[in-house]
Image (cartoon, one colour):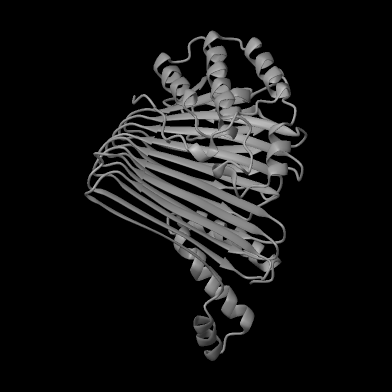
Length: 430
């Protein structure tokens, strides 16, 4: 298993004395003291050290420049509830993995016989997993993620054996808790194949902060379908570490909420690794959706693709901040990045920031961003063929978002489009 390393250089423009609130420090100390195993205690200590190094994020920090400082700070400063004993319904021998969380606690699970589910609180947690996960956490570069690693009540790891194909569903429900932190680690061994679905249901004032890491051995393949909750405040960090010839396909679907921020980090660590990251969003009313993307080509002969599209209505706001870094020696890199927004109201706002940091000379890299309105020529053409204005707008919007949905299987693609179409209809665009 490859040992994770730090993945981003220090940005001197963001140099500042980190703000570490005393209330959070006290809560972190209490959680560490209550840890039932030395492994969990050291894990939480490493995560807290990472957060203390990064500090409480604010909009002056470039990684959070588009996010509401008030919502961000008030969410992360919410009290952390102490771990509570809870009944967990579980079964072993099922056809697929299912993890259901309620208010930050594991409420039920199913797992096949040959898939491992390990709690970091257990004394027999696999040593190799513990080392890899703790090292990753020590080098965390996203402050909310570091806090999720430190504050999660039940950090869990899932291991998929060599050559096995499986599906995983993770569902988080918040009924009563004002705050819930979640931490998961997935290890796919050589040539394993997994499809992971990530879903959340939050109350209007609920705050969910989650960090998930995926480690792929040579030849492993991973497909992730992720959907933001329609309400609440949500921060999600997903990290992918790929070894030789591993492949990741990712699709995010969002209609936004009071605050919805997704941070993606992908590290292509060996030749032949591939990632394809896509997102489709339809954001209306006063909702917010933010995407923060970091891809690092650390080895030669790797491929990455980013395609994120959003339709913005009302006074909603969408942002996509994407950076591709090509390390020295990562020759024959093929990296593509396209960030596109369509504005359907005068008050809607969109921000796109594509960036390439290239330190090799034999690469094929492209990046681009567009922010604009519906193409009047296309609209006129459809109107001239007898379509009503509403029907023409709906068809153009569906075509605009459709490319980002191509990765999804037929059933999931239909469900994703139904979710987006509902938001567009509510905003008067379809």
